[in-house]
View: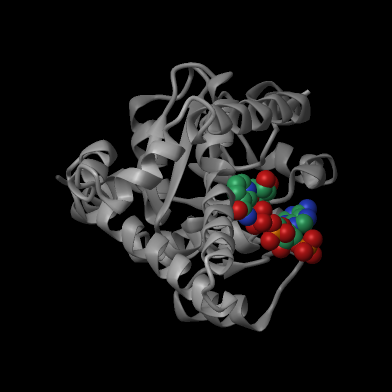
Length: 283
Ligand SMILES: NC(=O)c1ccc[n+]([C@@H]2O[C@H](COP(=O)([O-])OP(=O)(O)OC[C@H]3O[C@@H](n4cnc5c(N)ncnc54)[C@H](OP(=O)(O)O)[C@@H]3O)[C@@H](O)[C@H]2O)c1
């Protein structure tokens, strides 16, 4: 199966003719590296970020990316990607207003900032996409949930797919309200998996393993299971059944985890709490 990243490499017309990235920290930096990997020529990219560190300067020099030119020299790009912290949006808004023209595709990764928030700060912009990536984007294994305004054209959606696939899988939801559910599943999800490792290690130590060994076992188990999921076409349920012999040790543990008071209702409550909090933060 071809990914958007493969398609972008084969067909560079899916990539924007000009792109401005505002805010190049952890997530913006991961996106920038992904674009270069995807084949977006560096000369098409301008990065605006007051927090310049040597790594960013040398990356931009190596790939012909323009870093922090005077704003007066930056014209409305085909794509404007916002990678600042949500609380910085108001401060940045006056500069952004001039950058986002009627033909600019705006892609925001700002958690909790709605399409309405973004459009009110960027009054000339029409095509706006709200995207929620997650932490594994930093190792190109993220998943990004997206929702856009009705004005996003097919070409702009292609561009967004190509740009966001530089850091992993891209998924679209029908209505913006579902972005809060995406946040609760994949946005916050990596932390749930890290906590699973902690709990598995703790349980191993309770069974007599030295705590550091229990942690190494738990960590390697989750890494390996994740890699299997990644490489396999089988459903998680089939993978689980394949390692569960009737009457065996795994079946004994799963009987506890799948009990009415087991992991499923707990996960329902955890994800519902995350969604509720996401709704509160979006105002
Ligand atoms: N990290 C994640 O796992 C994750 C997941 C999903 C979504 N997000 C979203 O991604 C966005 C960025 O998060 P992050 O973790 O990458 O944050 P970050 O590392 O703090 O990066 C933000 C960058 O923007 C710069 N900045 C501040 N004001 C600016 C302005 N007016 N113009 C241009 N650049 C400016 C900051 O510089 P200073 O340091 O000098 O302020 C910093 O370099 C957030 O909105 C967050 O909600 C992050």
